[in-house]
Amino acid sequence: MSWLSDLFGPKKPKSADLARERLTVVIARQRAENGPSPDFLPALQKDLIEVISKYVQVNPDDISVQLEKQDNYEALKVNIVLPEFTMR
Amino acid sequence: MKTVVVTSGKGGVGKTTTSASICTGLALRGFKTAVIDFDVGLRNLDLIMGCERRVVYDLINVVNKEANLHQALIKDKHCDNLFVLPASQTRDKDALTEEGVEEVLKGLEHQGFDYVVCDSPAGIERGAVLALTFADEAIVVTNPEVSSIRDSDRILGILQSKSRRAKEGREPVKEHLLVSRYSPKRVEEGEMLSYKDVQELLRVPLIGVIPESEIVLQASNQGTPAIHLTGSDVAEAYLDVVARFLGEERELRFVSYEKPSLLKRIFGGA
Image 1 (spheres, one colour):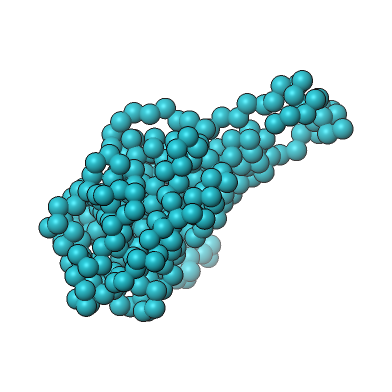
Image 2: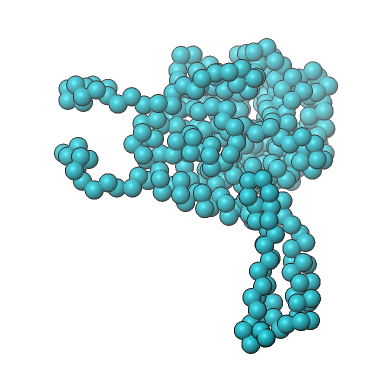
């Protein structure tokens, strides 16, 4: 009596919905990784570390440089985490 | 001359079936068309086109100048203006070079071909990259299924970075999405992604939807491109695809499922 459970049972999420959600994430990540790859990012990151290290002590891991793509534009996102004790 | 690559990344989604039907469709429209199998070492296009017993020379023979185009091109059994250039079955993939492929395409242009359809191998290795390198247009064959969609996205990235058009900064390769093995019933039930979902995920203009059908196996069994099986949904869908490829407007068919009526469900029937 599958129609009974169709009528009264709890609504199960359809597998196609799951597929769509998973693919949205996977494809966004893939495009970020494989897009026209900015070769200069590692060099930029290195330079940034050098410059910033002149003023504050930072860990190389505390600086991240990312190129993010939206539909029509790209955004360069630089994230610098300053250690608390160096703050004045 | 226009070069069209049929590609997908993933294997088994219907590239060769599609190549066979598209090249046949173009030939039926009166265009002098060649179809090239780029799957060196695993050729199959000859079987799908039904010309496997007439293969003497192949793509690599032509690239290596052991045979000329005229000797290697096999005239299709149904269409006078359609020719098949099979892949080599024995040699290794490194025999295929970019310069070699370029020469072959130039030779075909010289012979007055209107269209060359390049049947890409699966994967993203040399053969697949070479198949798309010289493309003006690309038909990306995708099943409404997660791995096929991810691989299609990957091959789209390669098209946009490794094709000649991309490298030379010319107008990009014109991309078309072809959703194949589509089951409207399963989509209706929520167990298969709809063609709209696939298109939204990949963001490539849709050129058609090919329904899942036993016709495809029948066609390959007999070595006749599915587009020849007149009256079948698959043949009709491919005819529509070719029409759209040539710029004509056709409404999508075979994409909706009608639930059997209550009476039918109670008393059985199809």
